[in-house]
Amino acid sequence: MTAAQTVRRLHTDGLLILPNAWDAASAALSVAAGAKAVATTSAGVAWALGWPDGAHPPEPDLLAALERIVRAAGDTPVSADVEGGFSNDPAEVTAVVRRVAETGVVGINLEDGAGPAEILADKIAALKAALGPDLFVNARCDLWLRGIGPAGTRMQEAARRVALYRAAGADGLFMPGVTEEVTVRALVDLGLPLNLLARAALPDAATLRDWGVRRLSAGSNMAAAAYGTADRLTRAFLTDGLSGPQIEAAFDYGALNALMTR
Image (cartoon, rainbow, N blue to C red; front, side):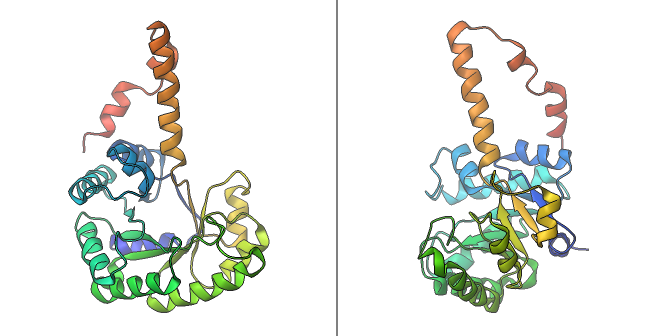
């Protein structure tokens, strides 16, 4: 079974839970913890490369980061968040994603953001024509995340957009910001494997599986939590210079080092 086939199977067998990685070490940690696939967070990768989320890091830096993540993940398939493809020109997006796929990535997230659905549909169609079934395209729709349009007609607009993305060849649907059961079930009925973004208002994994959700992403939460911990420990260390158990026992040096020996 190819990596791309594995990714497709993971979207049909229960719920695929993705902690989301931002560098090689976080990818290795995810695999060691039992993650069945690794997906990147665009925000986390951007922060690790010294850029804010939403700003396109220099492509050589991004591709090098993805190569390291793929290497650290080993045989575990990797999906990359490429935001909107860094262009509104389907041909340019295809060229970028082709180079992303050459790093060993077998799936991508591609988003509509605040733009017209037709633009994302054209990008997906171009990608599928060029790269075929070997690339899993997860279409991210930001209607709820960005609060686009009247709440009362949002589901109707979602159905319209998903129909466009599905016809263009999208393999999955990522709808961040949705937490209500009735909305989740309605989105499941649109026919693409549904991916949600982890939120405190969502129930546990077993319940999400029952609702029909096929993928759950942590997004930038893990990266932000890691940097938040580093911030707290750094400030405490700068205050008194003491290296207490919070720093020394954060993660075993030998165990972490062993993860990076691929």
